[in-house]
Image 1 (cartoon, rainbow over the protein chains, first blue to last red):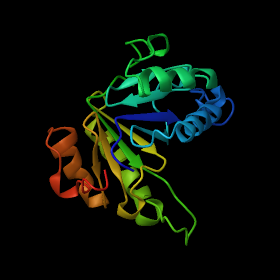
Image 2: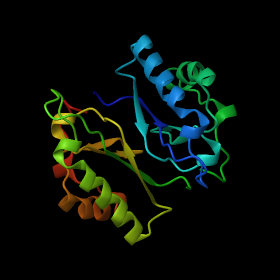
Image 3: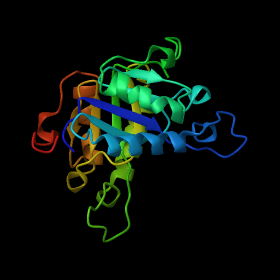
Length: 107
Length: 107
């Protein structure tokens, strides 16, 4: 793929039930990963945006976690319903979605 | 984890044998992921560097692929023997390892 303007990394980490750290998997990240991929294909923004699933990004108790580079902005508690806004405002519009950014103490 | 100065993403994508795209898995990425994680722990550079395994980063035929943000520099054909140099020169020293950077036509 060409080098994108925005690269969005979506945690796809799962852990067994009862694990003390929990995981984005337990908090619905599979559907969030799928929604990012689906919208990326529908919007055909292949040269502007890249979408990559990842292992653990760190703040498991605030997942699903989504990280956007090159800015290094971390979103927490992302739901399927938030994905359109992240695309339109941030990935394509260049304006981070302030309400979803994790606290500075976390990242 | 705190927001790192350098975030290194290491492809851990595998595909079945004979798949037309191949994969970083077929080209030894598992050992490269493990070496990045091992050196990250040994060097205790937890506030400076983050290491995250990922799904496909794109240039499968030049894997194992390693991507460093915020610069957005993609390395290809990375081996276990290259990991020390990437840490010392780029992740901790701030000087990208030119010989491993993929061609501009790829990324």
